[in-house]
Length: 359
Image 1 (cartoon, one colour):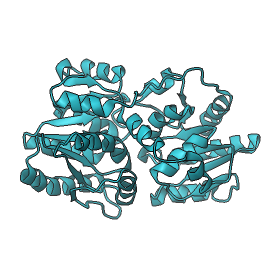
Image 2 (image 1 turned 90 degrees about the vertical axis):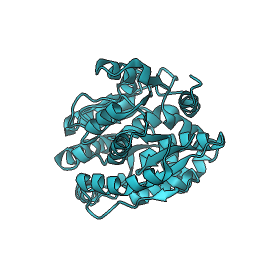
Image 3 (image 1 turned 180 degrees about the horizontal axis):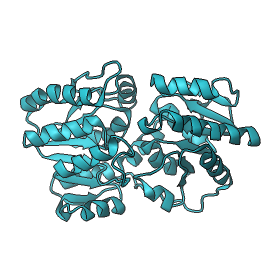
C-alpha cells in the first residue's frame, strides 16, 4: 500500500501523526505532504512527532484568504499526487487543507479516507468555514473514520452508506498517549509558569474574533477578579486576536499572557490547570484525557459527547453567560473517568480497515 497523508495545520499534525507513524512502523510506503497552511505552528508539531514531510507545498502567505489557500493547495498538490500515484489519501478534520486535498483526490479518482468524519454543529456558518468543509469532505470520501457512535449517526442521517462508515475513536488520544510516554509534565510546566492554581484559556476561532471575543474576555476578567484566580493564556499569532487581547486584558495582572506554546508545553499547562476555557475543537477532545472540565466559549459544538459525558458545558460568548459558566465550572467535580473520545487504538483500527482486515 502507498498511502498519502496530507496536513497543513497544528491540529491536523496532532491527529494525523500517530496514524502516519503506525503505517510507517508496519512497513508501509507512507508519504507525508505538508501544505503549511499555518507554517510556524505546523512546524512546531512536526518536531514533536519527529516527522519530516516528503513534500512541503509552502502555501502560507501574509493575510491569506480562504480562497487563496484553496487555489494554492490545489495547484501545488495535484502534481505531487500525479507523480506519486498513491493508493489512498488521508485527510483529517475540517481545515481548508483537508477540504482541498479531498477535492483534489476526488478529481483524480484517488480514494479519500477522512479521519474524524461525521462531526456536525448543525449550523453551516458556525464554525466557519469548518462546518461546510467537513460535510464536503465526508461526501467525497470512501472511508469515513468517525471518532464516536454519534458521529456515525450524523452520517447515516445524511444518507451516507453504512459500509463506508467505521467507528474507530479519535486519534488525538493516540497522540496523547505518545506524548505522555515521553515527557515529564511538571518539569515542562514549571518552565512556563510558576503557578499551582490557574485557568487555562485559548481563543482564536474566526467567528469569535471581534465583539464576541471581547465579551468572553470581559466575562473571564469579571470572574477572576472575584475569586482571586490567574488565567494562563497562550495568545494566538493572529494580529486581530492580539489586538483585542491587548486592549481588553493586556494590563490585567491576573492574565498571564504568553507566546504560543508547542504541543508538549500546552499539554503540560492543561495537565496543571483547574479547568479550561476554549473555543478550540481539539482542546475539547484533549481535556478529558487529563480529567479537566471544559467551558466551551462558542454558540455550538460539534463534539456534544463532551457535554453529555459531563466533561464540559457550552457557555455561549456573552459576558454574562461566560461569567455564569465559570462559576459552574469552578464548582464542578467530575464523577466519571471514561474518555468519550477513545482508547488510544484508533491508528491500529484505521490501518486494519484500510488493509481489509476489519476492526
